[in-house]
Image (cartoon, rainbow, N blue to C red):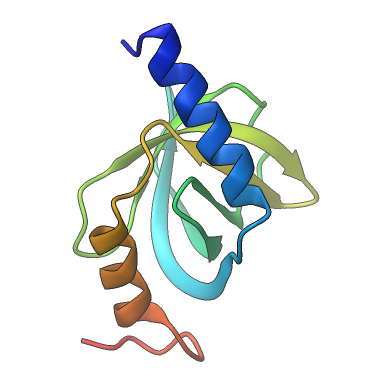
Length: 115
């Protein structure tokens, strides 16, 4: 569990990141809400603190979920919003800059896989 200071630090960083550039991309992935089955999704944008993706079925804000990108370990997140088939989630732990850059290098562009 995160301490109050860690939680405050994360909340601040997440809010700061909301004003930062979010990378638009298209990554096929799976999303598994707590207590549910994996669903196929496409990540539409990504930042150090979270992502948005397709989600046909409504998933309630506050739901814990796990996002799995190809070649990556599952990343725990919490649903922040769901609207008209799109979902927005905040990662429980910020992505590391190297992990984020590696994902961007692999998936940036016209949704083309880059090795």
